[in-house]
Image (cartoon, helix red, strand yellow):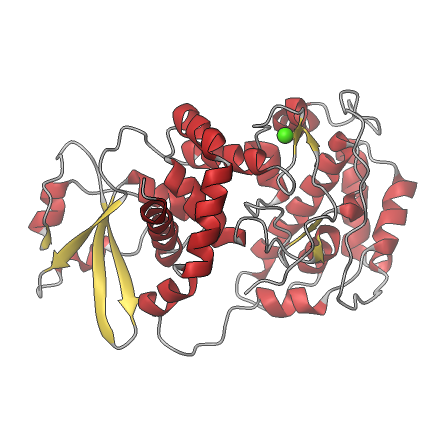
Length: 374
Ligand SMILES: [Ca+2]
């Protein structure tokens, strides 16, 4: 689905020791770090990403909203106006980012089986086996430290980018500037523009802290970076230097990607003591009293006894002192599948707010484990 980018291109390098503190420090002391990240280590040689799209020179620097953004970066974070101006002059508007961010036109009904077939397939499973073999020690270490099983980490990195083969071909600054200042018409346009504007801010902050050229960062059409496709703000908040080389490098270091995903899930509700698989199959009664349990926040909110009272039955008995949620996986014209899921399933939906996504992570991880014979 996503276009390829050669892996030899720009590294995402961050100063690990400081990455988590960047955003917080910047807010607490808006001018403190000024132009020079005091703790930044020397950056590795970075090559500019090759871009194969025709970015449009729209003179972002003439746009009122862009000038206001620059003013804010100067006032809040002590960026130098002249260097910001120079950066903005190089940003390009990317029409394909606007096209890709638009919701798909209503077409075929949602179909879990079709989705599953796209992702749980031999190429991805075999790549997962190799990735697990090559990173077995790191995966075991992440599992021990964060409580997230290796198979979930393997499943997620496989679904996201096929283990780093498919990390995106956009310059992060181009994608984020385009979406921050030229988001297409949509009901939630204002919120989405604010989100991408804050991610543009985060990109400038972490590039400064890491001592790298922000133009060297490449990623998806939405500005997501590296093997786990972290948005820049999430790199600052949840990125981990898991190979201990002093930098967070989500493009070049499988260990950093593994540790960062494990940390993200642990910080979003993954519970190592949840017990059992993240989701188990369920049957629902024709009365549809359970229907109100679908929708609402993506969280485990019901006791097994409440699910049972609403007409949800499971083959396994679940402890009544824990909470679960009902998950529906639509299958086009075929019957919908129902599952009962625990906190760990919903932790994965924090990564990507989709039942299909969470289930594909779980199923790919399981398929890789089975293929490895472990
Ligand atoms: Ca590292």
